[in-house]
Image 1 (cartoon, rainbow, N blue to C red):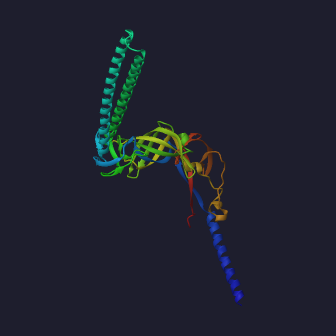
Image 2: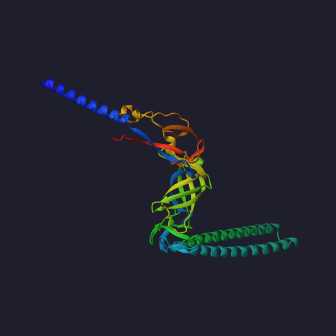
Length: 390
């Protein structure tokens, strides 16, 4: 008895579902398709490459010290404007001053030795001259002449050695004076301090590399964006192309620049190869700061007064029938009439394809080179409107 009731209930459910499906099919069959259109119109179009980059000063000088020691004073801070030749830091110079004093003493000693050697040479020259006169008069033995010649040669060599020592110690003095000069650190350029890397009392070591005291940007009114461009797009980027970019700090402002360099050295990150493109930009108001992230559009091609259609028109394909468009999921579909580029227009109430030749695209619109007239209404989509109940 229970089984009979269950079978009866299932039959009722099946009949109900069938009725609903039949009713839906009838409504689908009576639906009308209305198309959304757009007008083919003339306008300007740009083909761009989207990329990201980082702002930096055109030229940043890393000011360092060539000697090891302790920072006695530092006279600049972040954002300070400095002039070329301005003193920015002083190091403890006691060691270098002692080396200068020692070198000067060595020079004085060497010069004294040189004077003594010259006096000895002068005496040797006189003795040799007198001996030669006595030899001509046969007043002394020949052996005495040989001894005086040897003495004169030795004295002459001593003078040359003393002169060399003087030159050596003078060079050591010059080096010590240079090192003493290194204890005062000056700005090599006019600019703005963008980084201060040491503090008063800090010890720096120049054993392996030059310690950095500060970084100075030469001119923040002229900046550059280092843009990372994918290898697939780099072939379209050329020096002289226009560029536009935005930064998060001024999201509503678009900044302009020009491509000045396309670097051939690649960089690889997670198996993705990219190349660095330099975009120069004016920063007269000094809104832009080093390190900001820029969302860059590199203008590859720009055309004016060309015929344009929405990209949706090139993607649009009409449906075969209302039943297919509005049927159950298993019966829905579209028919691609052809793979050649084309757009659809209405001839009467039916869509008809017009083959066209495409030009450049900006991702939203595409240039039409031929095949379509200005003012034509192209299909970009369709709306399904159910038949009104009577």
